[in-house]
Image 1: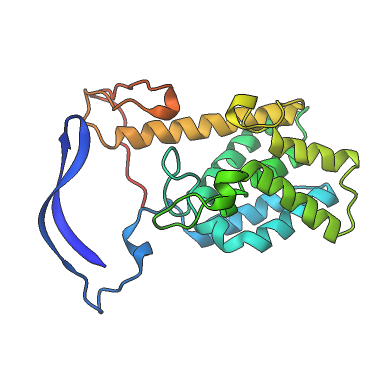
Image 2 (image 1 turned 90 degrees about the vertical axis):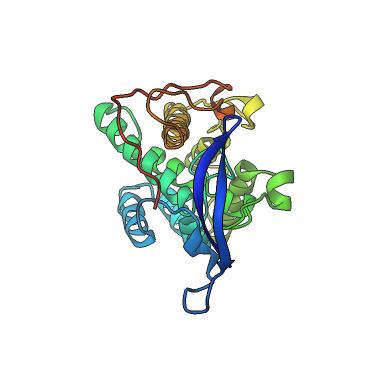
Length: 257
């Protein structure tokens, strides 16, 4: 493990570090790489507890059982992995934090619109990106696995739903299971964005919209952290290569922990 001190600067509009000193870490300072990467602004324990609180509100027995089983099977990775390699929530714990952000938004939407099936929306929100525990390699030096590159997280989690449903003798062809699988398969919204189908349930459309909203807000607030007030961000690939202006008298944007 190498420790360095330096100054963050911009070179041709892109961030770089001017290194002042650099040395190997001592044994007393520790050598766990996770100590030197960005983390979600909430602890694993707190996020895990809040996820459990949402699971208790999934009243459909089949959805509840499937969600509990899949979270148990992938819990460590789910609470520690990023939500993406670079675009949004690209920090340790980002996957769980992104999921919780969507669940909090979903709670508000369900409270505003009584027609929404809250159990379905919560179950879909919890599972929609769980396949990233197989698509991505780790919380440190994150890359895509062979499965991630060749299959992708949407299909991977759908396969997991089918696997655990068969293990628990749940008929995957009954209506509620087809609805749950549709939530996952449609959450990217468009075929060209990787969804095998477009949303055809109210809750599937809401999940897609909330997923987009949370990802875009995180991309923008992260970009704002790296520019001074009164200037523009660099062009953001995930936002149609647009630049965004950071107002001089706007909000502050704290870094993830």
